[in-house]
Image (cartoon, rainbow over all chains, first blue to last red; front, side, top):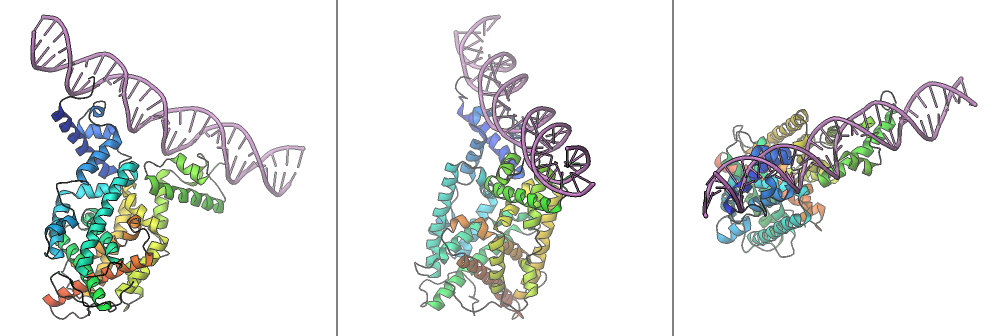
Length: 222
Length: 222
DNA sequence: TCTGTAGCCTGACAAGCGTCAGCCTGTCGA
DNA sequence: TCGACAGGCTGACGCTTGTCAGGCTACAGA
């Protein structure tokens, strides 16, 4: 080998092997205590050959996050809300969570656990994406709850909701035996209740909200 | 020195030095990539002397979690609810979060990040405590929302609420500039809204709920 | 059969790890 | 003045880590 591996298909196959094995191990033992030798043993790739396919250990983590966290094949929550205007927040959330928790549990876990091991540049990129998502979601919440521009609650609630979308994967060991669908419906209705309450308080303090809460169910605030 | 250090006060002082330095480093760089040499450098304790005060690196982590996670000086959420019967959930939560986020941010972060590095026995103890708390909180929720024994929602909601109590410390980098008090009030009112909605749905499906939601009326915090 | 070469692997490197034996220093009662 | 002894420190151990130079194998084309 003079200049790396030439067959691009082979490179792809080997990289997938390496990343798949590494993902499991990173989630099992953490990034720092997973060794290159571990990854080689599980993936079947030779220890020296590994460096023909990835630059180094950090490169594996970066590739994983690019595939799982910065994925382009699935919409973010605000994108999904954009695409389905008028639909109740709760229903959109159910679909969003089903998709997220169904196909990307590991990506969520990795993104929360691997942060300290990211290179600064990659961490900045992650934070930027998170901030953008938060901002976009806050716009929706502000409209849904009918609160004024200067009210800081939508931003906080956005942050909280995005955090709650990690609930399933992060705490599933405590939900042993629970129906996954009941789980995500519970989260969705909880979020809807939060937004409704925000709308109700804005309406009570202000004027009757223009948009109001769109979610189904009685507003219990009495 | 024949048999360890004899002055118990000195032992305590040194252990605190070691643990304080280690806590910062574990949160900064993760457990596995923090070295004994790092801990010594930051704490000022000599590398050999360190082993006069703690058994090894894992022992440091265990001591930290005992101090921060299995703390006995602060009540758990269900304990606080037991101690203040009749008070609105929302108010109890505000006080609980103020105490938790004020004095134990690092404990929360550590407990979420250090899990993969715990010895099995310690991990089992953590999980047991978590399960007990979840069960106890579910009892309260069931009563507050007036839902029947066989409804699985209180358990899921308990799990979700305990997860949400980690929101402040886990996502504070996204809440830069926000008033910490507004933050925890927002979480508290969100949780109250969730429980109210659970009560409303139980009441709608069943009979008028006996307990109902006890949260204070419209009192917009802002 | 020979040869060039793409891809695989052996074996080793320096660096860094957790750990500790054994020596050194300072203090204090006799 | 002396020695006993608590506590600090030097220096090194055996091991594991990420990384890679360079030799090896298998096979296509002549």
